[in-house]
Length: 209
Image (cartoon, rainbow, N blue to C red; front, side, top):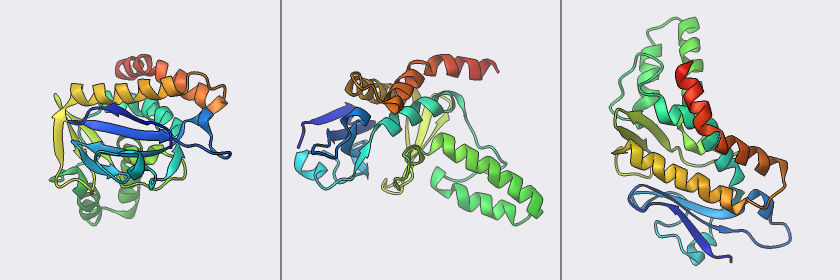
């Protein structure tokens, strides 16, 4: 198996991966076996300190999806705080339960409208949805002032990290994936790299809007 690459930090978010090999591998899309940890705790993949043997049991998938997805939701990871409907869950993992309790007191039309808003909200804050066709455990990230809340079912509790540090980890992951894809001419890879390069501009435009 290829060398294991680690991006991010072991105190925050860290992505570990080894590029897939073989005749069917897609290096132009950074297809890799990968794991992701939060504070060293496994969230996606087989092990906190993912080594080559552990990653051999992981699913191989094009990491170009993660790069493109991070770039797409960057303005909301940077800026959006609070929930799009009037709920106050004790933690991000209780979000849907709080929403469903609220909807039981609303008309079907009102509940459906709020459900749509919450669906869009999840697309912006659950990193597990960034992969096309791959089912992963939820990984929620939401800014709260100078901090960021992180929740996933694999974590013992909701975590709170300095927002600036968390975004630095995600920046390191995105930059590292761009480096892996630097020689790719695949349209998906080129679009993802361009979107990543434009993420700050889009975040500023979103804020001004």
